[in-house]
Amino acid sequence: MYKDWNTLKADCMKCMKCELGKTRTNLVFGVGNEKAEVMFVGEGPGYNEDMKGEPFVGRGGRLLDKYLEYINLDRHKNIYIANMVKCRPPENRDPSEQEQDCCIEWLREQTRLIRPKIIVCLGRISAKRLISKDFLVTQDHGDFFEKGGIQFMGTFHPAALLRNPNNKPLALEDFIGLRDKIKEICEHTYEI
Ligand code: URA
Image 1 (cartoon, rainbow, N blue to C red):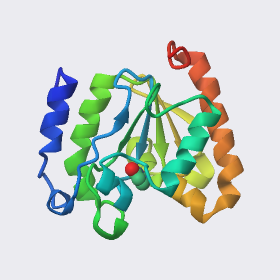
Image 2: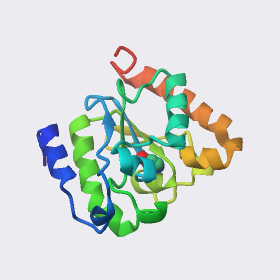
Image 3: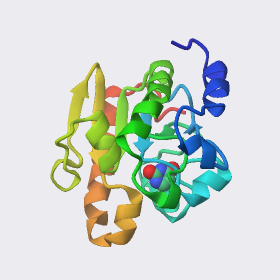
Image 4: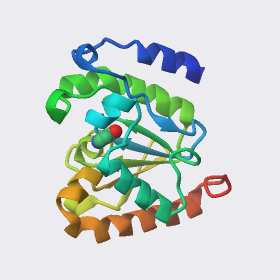
């Protein structure tokens, strides 16, 4: 168990626990405020993220930033964003169960140190792993589930919204619900 963010990050950056370590350009540790009350968890880096070493920096990331801005959240200020796996799966395939198993301890350590009040799962990969294996985005998006003192909510993955823009209004409702939940249970997210 890590007590210190910089040591955690330094060890994680060297990780070669799975095959994805061999093909990465950059490990994508995460971005944001380590003291955030709200954490977002995506799936894994794509091409742009692997190049830049930051989560959600492609087209999907720009869409995510718009939703965040709508409810006064900012990836560099009052939230933290990470992924289920920290290295890019080749050809942007889904990360395998085994790759997720290798990587999840890093996410656990990040969560232990950040101690978020709310975790938002972006897409089915993180929602199935962190909320419930039966989670269905189309059915369960926007609902809050309490687990271990943390409120979890799953919503559409930004890339899925780019493929199917019909779901954008539903995603916006989820973000509005998130804003309400933040106002209800968070102390400093909207003060920063
Ligand atoms: N998709 C994800 O799930 N995470 C990223 O960082 C980029 C794209």
